[in-house]
Amino acid sequence: MFALTLHAWSDVAQLVIAGAAILALVGATVQILLTRSLARRSLSYSYADRFNEPSMAIRIAKYQRYWDTHTYDQWYASAAVHDVTAQAILIVPNLIEEVATAYNRKLLDRNVAAMYLGSGIAVLWHSSAPLVTEARAATGDEWLYYEWQTMMADTQERLMREQHRIERKLKFKARMWAPGY
Image (tube, rainbow, N blue to C red; front, side, top):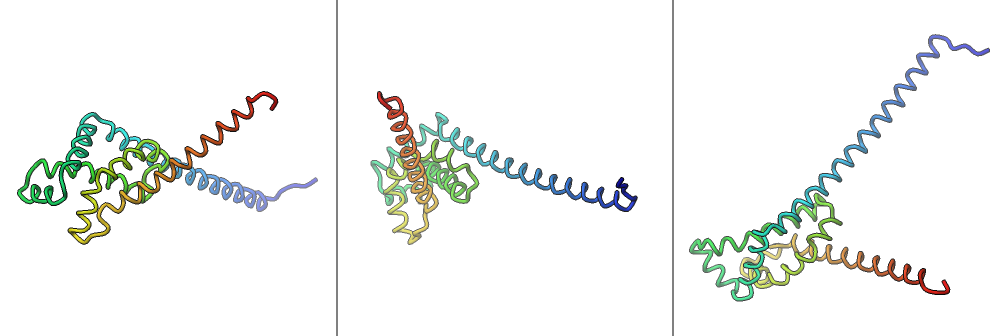
């Protein structure tokens, strides 16, 4: 019969403690990763809610209307005399640039942001052409609203991939339910 000595039992105890420490480390790592993921998702939904507020919808509509009828030079002349309306126009693009910076730095859940913000941000990008192109030319700063442009390109690509995935899934289901399958 095999009997453990006191020294052997201490070795077993050390192995058990080391195993428990490794499991605790793995558990803490998983918890940190889950917490970070939930924080990114929560922040993404928070920004989506912010863009869907009625006051923001009104601001976005005013912003789009403004750039349909004004040029960058007209805006700059108004802003130079501290016109409140001209300053308020920048709330929308600056908020989008904030969201885009967080998106590009992977501080947001990219799938949630693409689904809830992607199309709207692309529409606003196209209506912002006078602001972006003329401001870049006037200031010589090619990086002006670059984060927004980068996010827009990435979200459009994600939305296209998702659309393609859905179409494939629907085709598969249609074939599966077709007679004679």
